[in-house]
Length: 407
Ligand SMILES: *Cc1c(COP(=O)(O)O)cnc(C)c1O
Image (cartoon, rainbow, N blue to C red; front, top):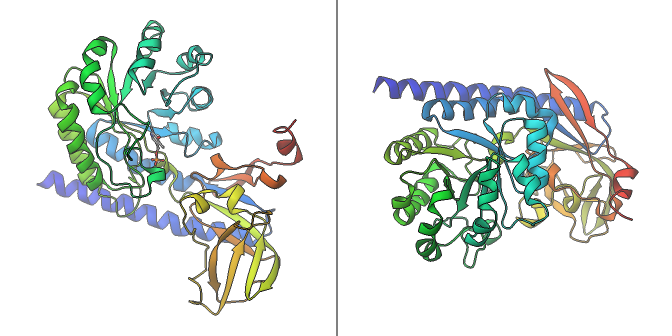
């Protein structure tokens, strides 16, 4: 009981510290935005990444599990040194991510691809410590080569349960191609058991530990008997571990129970959780036009710089703003592209917006920089890192970055 109280206190302290850093960093973001920095620009604060890392490290130290960062969500490698100090490595979706992980993160690389190209496989294996296959066909075709090269072999399965409502982001949606389904697994697994080191599932998206508990229940009911004797089980990503309301104690309990029951190592591979709330996108108001409503055209685009706004869709928060008509002056905030639907959303402000005003979009480190495009020839935002409160421009993009992707 005392140990449990101790953990609760530690968690409370870490979360309070994180909140304090968050407030300080957001004041810094605002000051930098108003101080005339060239826009559009991402500001990434390493203190905030480190606060997330401390939470992930706590989970590691209380469970002995390993945590990988999913490069798919965030791959700005100038901050990898602060992440690799705490995490065990990265998970990659294919050759380029595996190689970047090897070159810049310099720890374990676990690669999962829905299907690998024959011409890439040797390089993928060279850069991976572990490769996870999505079908028995690929396992058969490449598994032995992996073993020969000293790479561990895993199989992704469909755990048969998920609670992701948006089917776009639901790896267990009907007809999903992601993970072998149990009916096929049951008939085939025994033929390949010898070369399989671990099993992988990924079924969460921005979810809490209660959802993991229910997914695990389904996963264990289907695959539990096959886990004994394996080296590891990978619980995938989508765990929103660093969110304020995340139930760390439940996660820790689930991982510990699982490890004890099956005698395997457990991997978690969140992407979002590593850099949740750790960066912003600063943009300038270029013009304000009217068509029944007031529309502010800014130098950042939903389509090219924050595509999840249109895909999910969701409404990012702008610092100091309110919902439409909540504050005195309401505007539609829209991008500079020719796409009619390049609209970020409707927001209200205390003061009227003026041309040249800066808008700060929060929580933009994840699934934003990695998804950018140069559609419409729109320039990519600069990437800056704030390290020990000092700002450093780590990348500035221009015409050459647009041109080099055309021919
Ligand atoms: C997307 C993905 C992750 C990371 O997911 P987050 O939602 O960013 O935590 C991890 N593993 C796999 C297999 C994925 O597809």
